Image 1 (cartoon, rainbow, N blue to C red):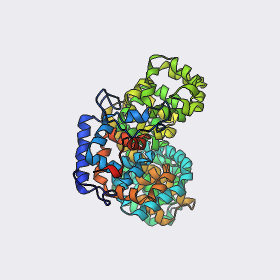
Image 2: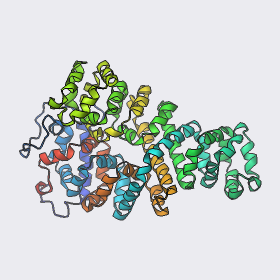
Image 3: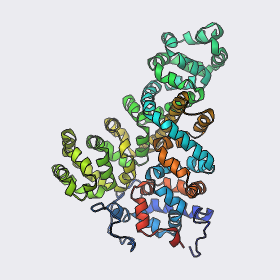
Image 4: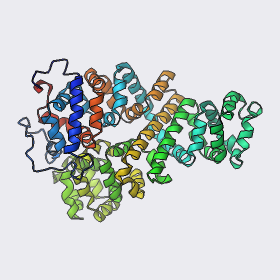
Length: 518
């Protein structure tokens, strides 16, 4: 840009910049294909070299920042004046300093940008997520059970969800409705006399409305076993039934996720495991090449997932570990001397624990090519490094047992849609549990219903999002740049770059600062 950036532009990128950023992101897709085999690799091209790098800026042996600066994605960002202007704005740099927040924002930029336009609403939702986050483990366990039941009976569950008050009444007393499972017409007969049926009398009007819905009644008549599924998971459904709208939204989201996963060929048992770890699955679904690599080397990744700090270090600096792919024993030897190995020294204890895990080391020795798989997709995996603690061995096992489904890039859109639906399920389930526990008031519950994906992401990293909500520049940048962020999010490699834990340090070392944008 020919003119100096004004102080106002330090906080907001203009409409013209947004358009050019979108075009630049499109150009990046052509230069640096989103799903190409060279993702994250270092090429021999003349790269950006900054005189700003100082001694001590990079931890000894950690080449992640330097290698990030050598990627095509970073090269385009620092050389394109409009992308650089966006990256240099104080608000963007505040976001870049929180890699998990950045990854969440890019997974659903429309929702977050719209919410950021009302900072008070953003702050309120972040505080609600903070209040509810303590209940997340219990909610996740319940979600797995809910998902198993709903995936087996999606049409019937959706029929009930279309009448929230009646559904909540059933969910509150599911065992009392179990006997309706053996007769396709039993429920129809019962609701026709709702006022005199002890199970329904208190909510007779709601049941009568259900009875008058022919499509819903036909779905229930076609699958009366749904009532036995409800009874078998009575506690999980009862926990949500205090919030009828939340229950209905949770079930609809779960049914949508189930359909997408089933159409991709994912098994029922894997669907339940995925539902229990929706945050990690959402991150993986956003990086199809990394997900494909994980499916192809699932046993090795399962071993690494049992040691999350070591996994995070490997993901963040994948190219440095590629050499282990050629020698099954080299990695074991290196972990024994982790404190003196430049690649591992910072997390020596974590690597030593991994090295002493015989089962894990056997799995890695059986498939050392896992290291080249990570190195060949270094940028994608580095963008997932901040999520390493969420990548549970059970989730990896589920992915591995359905490897063909997760290794088909043609399934990427279905898996991404399923991930978003699972995040909505997570949000509705957590909010209902929190409301029942007195942690959320009615206004907060309504805010969750209106912003389920944002709430789910916030609940996964509540402190980080609450901190962002206090940064006015970050909020302004987020609110003003929906189109630019959406264009960036459409390119997995660029999204991975910006979610990379080393991204903020790379910006600093490249000299990208608001004072230098012109």
